[in-house]
Length: 128
Image (cartoon, rainbow, N blue to C red):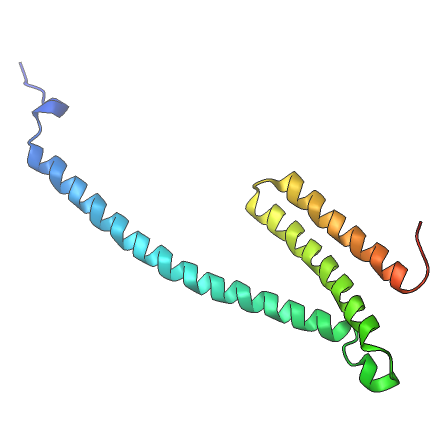
């Protein structure tokens, strides 16, 4: 009759070498994750900076210089547009992360609606 080896019959040195290999692999992946996290933060940060700069230019930051409007109206207009932009970013992050999706999408839509109401109020055409 043939003798079959059992799992418990294996030498213990094999198990310890496997554990050591796993620890080395885990340490390497943790170092790679940290470096990728920093790079991803920089990339996403620059994306948001470009979005904010584009929104500021589109919202009319040059209006007081060209036609002589008050700075107060331009600043309030920019803030209302940034509120809508923030709502869009919250919606995007809510869909992307898939954590608290309903809450984040609802909050983003509420921010965008509040931005719309503020824009109409600044234009002296009330929605309500």
